[in-house]
Structures are given as C-alpha cells and as structure tokens.
Length: 469
Image (tube, rainbow, N blue to C red; front, top):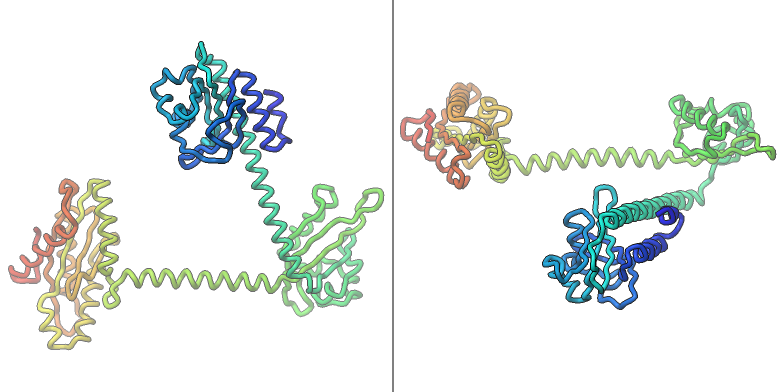
C-alpha cells in the first residue's frame, strides 16, 4: 500500500498497472480490471489477464452485463467464490461469455460519486469465501485508486486551464504585436528611470517629464493601493511578478485604462534593483466591454418586455388564453400538492352590445380596459385576471374557499358598477365555482364550464349579480 501511495508522480496508466499487478498478486486472481462506469456503460480503462477475454480496453459494454453492476448498485465491495452457485451473478451475460467463476469487486469513488469499479476475477472457483480482511483491503485499494484518478483529472483540468490561459495570452500578444507597447524602468521608490516612446504617448508626457515624476502621481487614486501592495510583496520575495488592470491620469485629466505587467530586476547579489513594466493600452477593450454590458442589459429588458407582451391581451392588459393555460396548470398542481381549494370566477359585461352600438367600438374598447382595471384593483395580489373572449373575463383565485371567492366576486361586481370612468354605468354578472382536491379527475375545461354555468344563472336571475355553482 505504501508503494502504491508513492506513485503520485507516475502517469495514470502506470498507476493502473501497478494497482492491477499488486491486486492480482495479493488476492491470487488471474483477471484484474479497472473500469469507468457512466450512463449505464462499463468501459475497461486497463486490464491484466493471462487469458484472452471477450471484453477489450476502451470498448464499452452494458453495465448490466457485468458482475460489477452489483457492486455499483449496492455501493459496497462484493465477492463470490463460485459464480455458478450464485443465482444473481450467474445470470449476467459476462458469465456465459467468459465462464469466470470467482469474483470480487469494489466501486471506485471520487467524493460521493461512483465513477468506476475495481474488479478481480478468475476462471477457477475458490474453496473458501473471501475473508472480511480481504474485502476491506479491496475497498481500501479502490478508495486510493479513486484518489489517484481524481488527482489525474484535476491535473488534466489544470493543464487545460493552463492551455486556455496560454491561448488567451497568445491572443492578446498577437493582437498587440503590431501596436506600440509601453516599457518603463522604475526605481524602488516608483520614480521613472526610462520610458520608451510608446509609454510616453500612453501617459501623454515626454521622457524628461516622466523622469521628473513617479508612477504614483500618474495613477488613478482608486487603483494605487493595490499596485503599491503588490510592489511591496515583490520586493519582499513573496511574488516574482504581478499583473493588473489600472487607470492612469493624462495631463488633460482623461483616464487611460492599461494592462500593467511588472517584474523585479535584481542585482547580481540578489538584492532588488528596479522594476520593469510593460503597459498595454486597453481603453478600447474596456469601452467595448461596457458597451456590450449595456447592450446585454438592453437585450434582457427587451426580452422581458416581449415575454410580457406574449402573455398579455393587448387591449386590456389581462392575461391571454395561452398564459391562462400555463397558470391553470401551475395552480392545479399546487392545489393537489397542498390540498387547497382553487376558485374560478367567470365575469361577463351585461348588455355590452347595446353599449357598443350607442357609443361605438372605440368606446367599447375603453370600457373593456376599465373592466379589466377594476377587476385587477378588486382582486388580490396572487389572483390572475384573464380575458377569456370578447367581453368575458376569468378570474383565478388560488387557495381560496367558496366564502372568500364570493367576497372577491362581489367586490369585483361593485367596483365595476360604481366606476365613474365611463359615459354610462356598466354592470357585470359573475359565476363562481370552487374546485377542491377531493374532486380529482375533473378536467380544467369542466371546472371553467361550471363557473360559466353559474354566470349564465346570474344572467337569468336579473344580471348584475353573483351566483355560485
């Protein structure tokens, strides 16, 4: 085990081979397999065996066809000294394909996730079952193997991250290859010793003017503390270089964004001598990023408006039929989950056609807007107002028993009847139906139809009233 744990500097393939060789020797088994288990597939990563097998490295087979499925299913190491006598293992196709009679296997974990299996098999059955100590050792091997795989994955991720970082650096280097790059030499106190023409153009000063200044006087105040802190860390030997984005103040007061890379130049005895800085003008990039952020925000706002418009009736601002169907599905699911009632109130404007005939369709549209506004004002925050069609509206009331639903319906009726925003008083009739979860099996259309039936009962009984079905 100590030898296996000391293999961290080997390649993962070498580590696999050491584990396989060691396990075969310890347990006296001929076949050893380290496999990846993912999405129902068993893919051997590395194998050792003295005999030819039907399975091949890198070729996935159904996980259910292998003995390992049992270790994966239970999450524990399992063993069988004689597969022919085990009704579960002998049913797996691998037994018919290979005739391997003895088996021991353990799941390989990374954290809490099972990512593979470590299996040992042999064509000969064993006279005695595997001991608890042997199974504990197998689990320990699988555990340390999981750590080795995790280290390998982390190293691969690190290499990929380094690769992406290198690509990004190369991209910027290429982008700036034909552009002037500012280079300065700065003493340990921050005074400019030398500055090339590109740096002078970036700062807006001649080299002589810069040599009479220090970089602190050119740095935007909010960016100075971090810059100084990293310089002190570099002089103390805590870091060898640093990079940061910062702002410089030009003579006219304008700000220039720059990417600053600083390294420490040392004397022969190792003592700090001066700093060498490369300064890239990235003002344009920052401006573009700000513009992109602004455009992204504008796009998000536009998408929100489009989503809202797609859900609302353009005339009244109430929910349209499509949005109502989505809300109905949500509220029905909640009613079933929480065991709470769901109320339906169907509202229809009384004598709307004569009103339209007297005042015209434009006035009729204004009246429907007022009806929708009164319904929203009289309903509660969680209620949904929908234009069902023409002058008919549906009010959906989550978690509302019958008595409360009647109160809301009456409030809606009175709000519309007392409105003074129209040239003539309008009234509405309302029908109420309350669904309870005990009525399972009732389709939504049937529930709406019952509220509609109550509405027509209100019409028959004189209009401007509320009826409950």
